[in-house]
Image 1 (cartoon, one colour):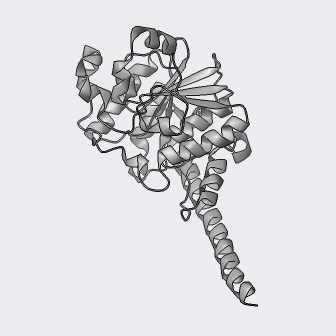
Image 2 (cartoon, one colour):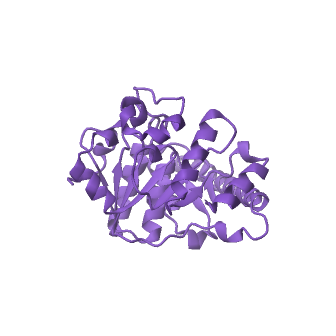
Image 3 (tube, helix red, strand yellow):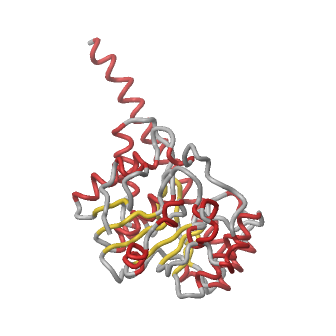
Length: 294
């Protein structure tokens, strides 16, 4: 009887947790759908898409950590031979990107510079996605709609997963949701903690066999501050007025850190034949990902 009295509250808490999580997920999806509808004027519906066709087995995801400016010519040539995906300000590093993700398009100094950067990147034939349309800064979407239409940018129908109490079970559950194929989610793509996790899961959904993470240092400065000469002269005015604290990136703290999430994703994805690698041995993610020599 005593055992039953202890189990019942746990079952009740679990049921309440499940109902709350499901309800919050539906609310967040509805918010994304409403904002996408407001942004997409007639004739723009085709831009709401997550799809892309791979042209290599390995995808390379490039973040703006300072280590990217320390790569040698052989390493850069290897990266250039693969499908490369960038995000936010990694495009200040001169690579040919197959796909690019940005999420700040407001009138702040950072937003204006990021928009100018992705407009230039898109001219080279790069597929560009705007993500985080659910952010409250875009509740007046007129300017955003014009930006997307004029540049033929895609819109990612993403939403941020609600939080759950810290536990290994919940971490595995959230990572399983992250990996759900967009076709089984009415085109929705989920996010947790960092855009990096979303892009990794998209690479798997697109059909890549593996992904190499480059510049995902999660500690130290951005490459464009540590090595300003690595930025092409015509892009120097677009360097953002900010820096990552030397103590570490904000997404890599707490129980649901990007390192713990990616380590959990690696465990389940490798069982499906999808592998992840890190580009150097002295960065945080090397604790959960194998190093690729290239």
